[in-house]
Image (cartoon, rainbow, N blue to C red; front, side, top):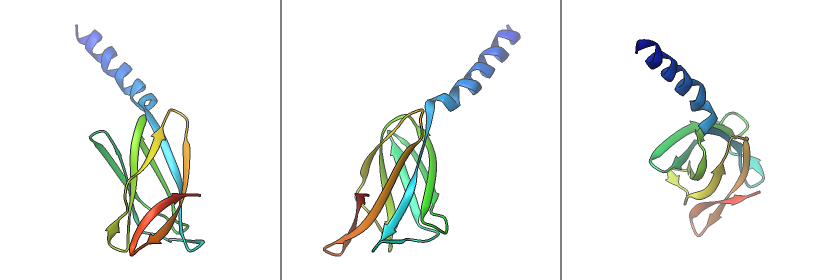
Length: 109
């Protein structure tokens, strides 16, 4: 019985990465990189993953597969969520942060 339990756990560990996808991309504002340290958050159902942009405004997150929402904390405000799709294949999403009436929104580039 212990052998079956151990084998089952190993199968779950191997299968878990197959249920996750990589969502990556970059953020720009006024045709320039936003730079490092901005929060990027992806919500898939009840699962929330977050990362910070690197020196070039790039981000990368491993998230569950399916429909998700991406938002960014820029100048101490969260942008409205932008729908993204995560699959077993990496998905690239490059965005421009656009000021619309004092509030920044994500526009796909």
